[in-house]
Image (tube, rainbow, N blue to C red; front, side, top):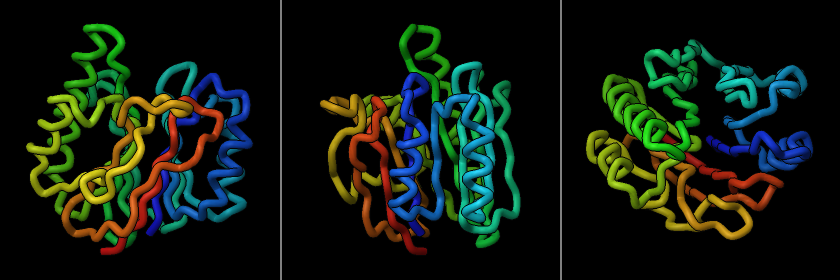
Length: 215
């Protein structure tokens, strides 16, 4: 299974081209953050033509979180903002019994938003620990790998591994000269991670992350 996550940047005027280029990487699961609201219908139709299931949730007036799956989906759920510190997320269960959390956490640009981001990380740990299925959580965590709150997340989900532990690689933000590792992949130990890489620049301020798994 190949999974891809890319923050497309809501001010990116070339989102369609970015999506078309990322599609060529032949991922089975694609998670896009910051999709422009006026492109959501286009992306839904794009997914339908390719026989992908499409799930989306508006983050705010400027951006939408979207997940596309080549694999059959048995259940999808929007984790409502009131249950996730003012930022909705997507949870999907595949027919194969794998649970995927598609994520776009709060950017900690103020004290209050930093506190909300920290609460989101705490809630994510609880959600992962409640699952009996194999779990993948992937997306824009807006949290650098060196931050204590991220290290706390990994400690509290002690059945989980992190992609960079297996394949240390480039940072993901800012894309032209990456300084921080804020786009993450964590997964339960049911999986064998075969590769974890940063993709190429695609007109966003983030580099995409791509991983290959097998159970």
